[in-house]
Amino acid sequence: MRAHPVAPLLIASLLGLALIGCGNAEAAGPDNFNGDSRRGADLVKNYHCGGCHDIPGIAGADGNVGPPLHRVGTRTYIAGYIQNSPDNMTAWIEDPQKALPGNAMPTIGIPQKDARDIAAFLYTLK
Ligand code: HEC
Image (cartoon, rainbow, N blue to C red):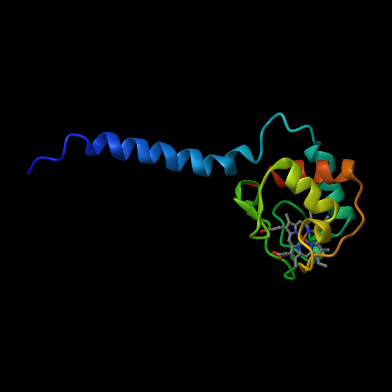
C-alpha cells in the first residue's frame, strides 16, 4: 500500500502548528524576563507560599492547599484560566483575587517588584 503523497507534508505542517500552539508554554519563561529568580526563591520562603504549595527546591514547602508548583514554569494556564505569561504570572502573584475573582488563593499584598522576582523563580520550575 502506498501512502498518499500529500500525507507526510500534511502531518508535518500539523505537527508544526501543534508545536506553535504548545510553544506558548515555552515562551512562558523567556530568558530575557527581567526578574531575579534567586531573590524570588528567598521571597517564596519569606511569604510562606510553601504553607499552601508543594514547591521544588524550597525547604519545607510541602503545603497541600493549592496545587503543587512542579513544572509550573511550563504550564499552559494559571489556575486553569489565565494564559501563562510573565506578565500574567506577575499579576497573579501580586493580586490573585483581581486576576481571577473568587479563586481560593488569597491576595497577600505582594509588591510588583517582588512578584516579578517570584515569577522568575517559578519559571525555573520546568
Ligand atoms: C492560603 C493558601 C495559599 C498561599 C499562601 C499561596 N497560594 Fe498559590 N494558590 C492557592 C490556591 C488554592 C491555588 C489554586 C487556585 C485555582 O486554581 O483556582 C493557588 C494557585 C497558585 C498558582 C497557579 C498554579 C496553577 O497550577 O495554575 C500559582 C503559580 C501560585 N498559586 C503561586 C503562589 C505563590 C508564589 C505564593 C506565595 C507568594 C502562593 N501561591 C501562596 C493557595 C495559596
